[in-house]
Image (tube, rainbow, N blue to C red; front, side, top):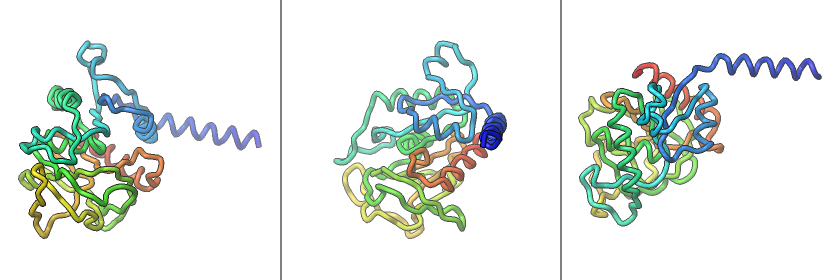
Length: 237
């Protein structure tokens, strides 16, 4: 029994040594869920924005935007709809971070994905339904179950098609309402799919609408999201 425990311990040490080191600058929404999520794949060091401004750190591998309130609609040229609850102070800081570190790869989760979409020139659908809880997303010919908690939706379609790539979309259209800042139903094309993971190459941004960091997100999906992030960071560093 003791030998078996020692073997498992040694194997764990071996796995940890194989993890790549990464320095992640995260916004104010950072919590233990995100830290645990990234440490499944990386040997991650998390730092604060003030450490960059003060000169305590001079290198960042990844800029992380996390969950929270809706993005202020004026950033994408709309009024504030009746269901939109925003945090202007956080938006200002996060937009400054985005522009201050333009050359650094950026990952956004939930609210963070919406911020990256807006900062990259896209828009948001201000209110949808059907996206609370676990549901299937499609990546090519594969399906993954992801956890969602959002009432707004990425709308990269406001950009030229060359400026974004939809990596994953909802397997089915889950919402029966898509309203804008005037609380009016949007007119969507027949080709419209509900975006779940979107790449914005020009701004080096990867937007993940769901929550792969949540404990109830299946391991298969967690692994897929981490592998996608790793490939993204390597390509855009």
